[in-house]
Amino acid sequence: MNKTLLIVLPTLVLAGAIRGQAPATTAPGTAPALATQPAPQAVAFDTYGGYFVSNQFEPNSPASFVILQDQTAFDRVFGVAMVMGDTSHRLPNGAFKTNLVVAAIKRGPAFWTFKVQTVTVQTGVLTVRYTTTSTPSASATYSCPVIVSVPKGDYKDVRFEEDGRLVKTIAMPN
Image 1: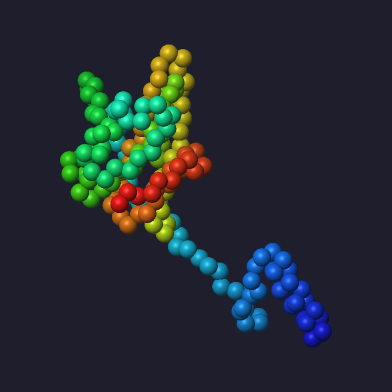
Image 2: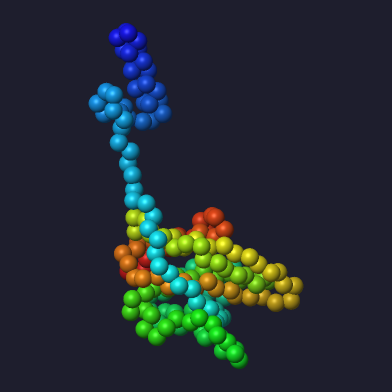
């Protein structure tokens, strides 16, 4: 029985070396500790409407992704769309005291609708997951945003995941 153990153990160590793995350093009969990262934590968020995208903001880009930390930056990208009887949910006054805004914008010959599924943070990365639907148009072009506020935090990056796939990662501005 000891001979079998001596033959199998070097074979396992060799197999790990061939795959580029270091040999396990755990005591015999114990499982190696797995490196774990904390689970994603849900982040409170709110979405807003009733805004148009400035025609001065990246007008030729089919998609834009932004992090906005103050009202001045927000006003460079978005304007209030005033329509009679409009009841759109808009950013409250002073929102940037405790929040920041992240937004994705799609442009082109289709009207896009966004639905934010979740916003999470894991090891400093804020992830916004959303789904989209579109209605093509043969006669008009659109700039359609999803505008999301989240509490300010110690984020290093913002990831945008659209329809189950990563579409953009942006580093937090200093």
